[in-house]
Structure formats: C-alpha cells, structure tokens
Image (cartoon, rainbow, N blue to C red; front, side, top):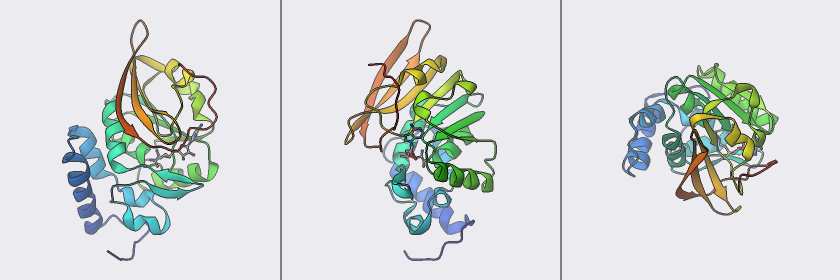
Length: 224
Ligand code: SAM
C-alpha cells in the first residue's frame, strides 16, 4: 500500500493496521499477556520509524532506524515485554533505546522507565518522539548501558534489546530481589532469550526462544 504519511498522525488507517498487526503477529502466535497486548495496540509504532521504512511499520520485521541500528520486530518486543512482565509500580531499565518504541511500550505498563542508548543521534530522536507522543516521563540517557545505570537501581526489571555473548554482571547486580533481567544471549548471528530472576540466594535462569539482535557494544564483565 502506497500512501503519504504525516509525521505526527495516528489516524484510523494506522490504528486499523496496528490492530491487525497485534492480532495476526502476536495474539494468533499464542502471546496472550493482556496488558502487553493492550500496550502494543496503543503505541503507534509507525511514528517511531524514520523515513520510508514507516510504510512497513506494521509488518512483522525489524526496520532500519539509522546508525546501522534497527527497531525490533513487533513480535519480539511483545515476547520480551511479556517475559519481563512489568507491573504498574515497577522501575525498569532498558538498554538499547534505539527508536524509543520499546521504552514507550514499557512506559504504558510500569511506573518508571530509564532507557540508555550509546548513539547520541538515536537517543535525541527517541527523546523527541517520546516527548511528542506524551511519554516525556521516560528518562533517555546517552551512554554505555552494558554497565547498567546504577543511579536508578534497584530495578524490578532490566531489558536488553541488543545481543551479548553472556549476561553482563553489572546488569544482574542492579536487579531488586524478585526482579527480572531479559536479554538475548549468544553469538553474533543467533541468540536465545534468557530470563534471569534475582532470588534471596542468587539467580534463577530460563532460556526461551531463539532470536537475532544487533550486538551490545562495550561490555565490561560477564556472569558466565
Ligand atoms: N529497543 C529499540 C527500539 O525499540 O527501537 C531497538 C534497539 S536496537 C535492536 C539495539 C540498540 O542497542 C541500538 O540502538 C544500539 O545502538 C544500542 N546499543 C548497543 N550497545 C549498547 C550499549 N552498550 N549501551 C547502550 N545502547 C547500546
């Protein structure tokens, strides 16, 4: 479908495309976390996609956002958000702001979102998009998120939207007890989604589905 996009518009056609995306790419694939599904129906993904890619914003794939980076596939955003299972009172850290879309979805679901991006240009554009859409309370930080953001700890949730060879130790350490870390772990071409939960005595780990993410740059230390 070829059409003109207005930079700030979330019109009836956009909403219809988004509802269809959520139904066919997320709900029909078995992801039924009601709050996550509702948040993804609400947040206008197309307004986070720059340039011509916007026309494909409701297709089931990552799209380029500049600086060699991507906005993640909607299904993977839903899977990772459901794995994090953020609650209304939670403080959550996202590593890898990119377009700001995942941060907006999180902001619908929890109390505080801090998101870190290493590319200043991406962070600036995400900041502007989030402000325009009423997500001014999301804190966007420029820096190396592989060491987390100690100022905001402890977090009930940490979500990393870039791939690491193993779990970065500082991110684990910034979790509250009961908090969850969701991160793609593996090689540069293929990873598995890892969910770690901090307990009173250590960490539990679950390995979920396969995925492919751009690399997390600049890690300091790993848990294994
Ligand atoms: N969550 C994003 C969204 O909703 O658009 C998509 C993130 S994109 C797949 C991964 C992002 O992680 C890129 O923007 C990349 O620059 C960023 N990144 C990679 N290593 C990083 C690091 N050490 N600290 C912060 N951001 C990092």
